[in-house]
Length: 246
Image 1 (cartoon, rainbow, N blue to C red):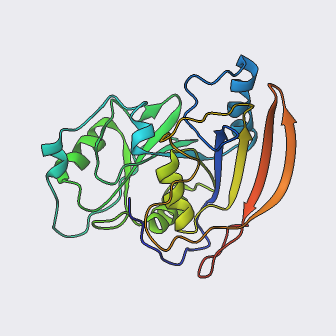
Image 2 (cartoon, helix red, strand yellow):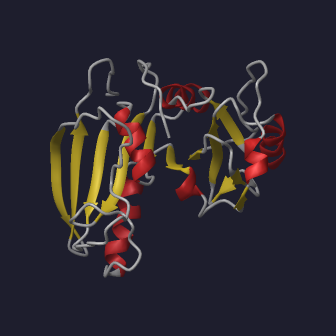
């Protein structure tokens, strides 16, 4: 996914990338020899932040959706005038943000284990798909035309939904897109006592494209957690042209 680079408004949420990795930086936990207590630590730390929302990319969100649209349905493009965002009625206390640029995911309802589902889409998705989301009570935000504008999406997540703290918990691709766009403020990393070693499995950040500059992290805290895990917290230094949230 290509993300446009643009200055970010101060109203955007504070973004915390919260992930569990092996010692060698892999994030596909299937088959890892972890204790039940070790696995539980991820959710306990997530809850300790008391976030307003959590976000994943389309591939990760497929595990929570009821299916995906066909290639022909996704290929139907809208090229008309700009359309409005949609926030479903209701008292939404927390949000599950699906970064789904092409509108591939099929949702049964706007509820995901008590969190309200919000799709982040590009302007190219069809009117029919937007009508389908409204019918199911799924909110959506439109950000960018052919390529997703992550900065604009975050501004809208803050302004439209009132989100102040967002947990980014995606795969390497979406995490890398946020990082490249200068939109990760903090890294919350649970390092498992595991060496994965499987070549080709996803890493914590997979940044696509040329001219990618490494980002400097500032260590904030290190804590040993049950299950022989290390919880490491970093602040991500802001790059030129971006202002990190406080």
